Image 1 (cartoon, one colour):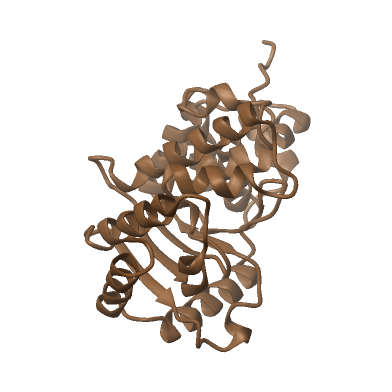
Image 2 (spheres, rainbow, N blue to C red):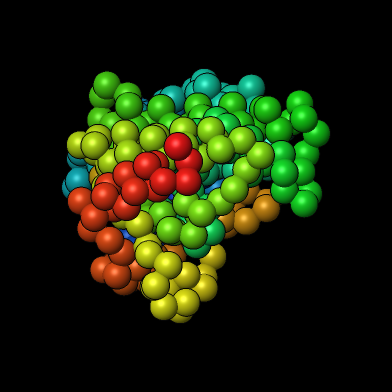
Length: 287
């Protein structure tokens, strides 16, 4: 039987990586492949997300490996069965950076998101007008058509906050410096601050402002996003950059970035003081 290649989406790779984590402590790859009646190349490509594996094959392999966490096995089997290219982001494959596409897929499945940016309003809380200014006025700004596409994607991603089933829990740190931005139309920041205020009232959103008086050491590193997922998927950290971000499951890196985020949050204004400050801005220069 000819094995069909699957598009190596981030979740295909995560399925393969989880199978490898279960296999490595108990069985060599050759022995596992033999137990399944596969050749070693097929197993290697499955574990790298290059070959598609069925849910039944996941269950069979895990049974041979002696995996006792049946709920975790079922979760991996379910994801393995999901056909690639079915999310709203699928039409953008090949049109945006692969790392960005990976991040969108990860963000869509996340249970919690913690995000901070040292300069601008974090993406999950941007209005279309604000996002358009950030994207279209950058030194390396794309064409107007591409800029509009990127704005559309950024706003579409925000649906994770308002979906009916399991809306993501968001903890966002907003730099006060971002609230001082000036655009050609004052309505842009006024609408943006209103959106922040509305978000701060959502039960699944915790919003804090990092005041201007915060020591520079707290805002000297790049923007980062921390995502957690349902069992058994590992957390992911993403550090933003022009190429769509760098993503990692490395436990040491995750611990470092999580500790850093907690330190930032500890010096940020609490939620009620954050809302007070946003009201001050709304009643001040943007009225």
